Image (cartoon, rainbow, N blue to C red):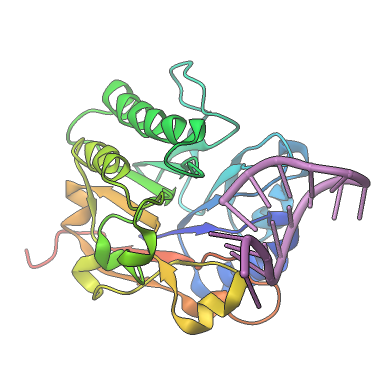
Length: 260
DNA sequence: ATGGTGGCCCGGCCA
C-alpha cells in the first residue's frame, strides 16, 4: 500500500499538477488538504477517470480536505463524527483497503497569544478523542495531513528562528504526542535524517535556501508501522510552475509482515 | 527592510 499526503493549497489552482503527480507516483491512497473548494466544485470525475474513488469535505474558500483511494473507499465521514466542531472542514475519514484513513488539516494557530492557538490545541485534543471513540486498539488506522506542528527540532531548518512561534511550541508538540499515544507512529524519521522538510514558505526564496519544516505527517498504527518499507518527500513537486508551498509525503507499506 | 509570495477573488483575509 502506497499512502501519501499533500497540502495542495487550492485544488483549483493545483489540479493539473495533482493529476500528473497521481499518474507518475501511483499512490493507493492520498490525503489532500487545503482544497479551498466547496463539495460541488470538487473534481471527483477527473479523479475517477484516473481510477480513484474520493470523499471531499469543504465549504468553499478556506480549508477543505479530501481522500482519494483506488483500493476502495467505504463509510466516509465528514467532520469529527462526534458532533464536535472541526472548525471549517478540516477532517474527512474513510475505510480504504481495510485501513481507517483520516485526512486532517490542523488549524495553523497564527501565534502563541492568538485565540486560534487555543483552537489548535483543542482541535488536536478532539482528534485524539475521536480516535478513542471510533477506533479500537488493534485497528488499522492512518491519520495523514498538515498538522502545522514540527514534531521536534530536527524537523525545523533553524529552531532558533522559531523561538516563541507556533509549530514548535511545547504545548502543541505535547498535543501531537497525545494523538500519537493513541497508538500511531510517525515512521518518517526511521527512513530519513533530520532536516528533510515538507513545507517551505513561498517568500524570500525559502525553498531554494533550504528554509523549511516537516509539518506534513503520515501517522500509522502499529501493524502498518511494522510493515513500512520506506518514506520520502517528493521535493520535485515543490519546484517549477505554480507549486503548492507543500510537497507530498509518501509512505510505502508492505502487504504482508516482512521476514516471516 | 517588522517586509517577502501566493491563493481566494477584488479589499482584505489567510497561511
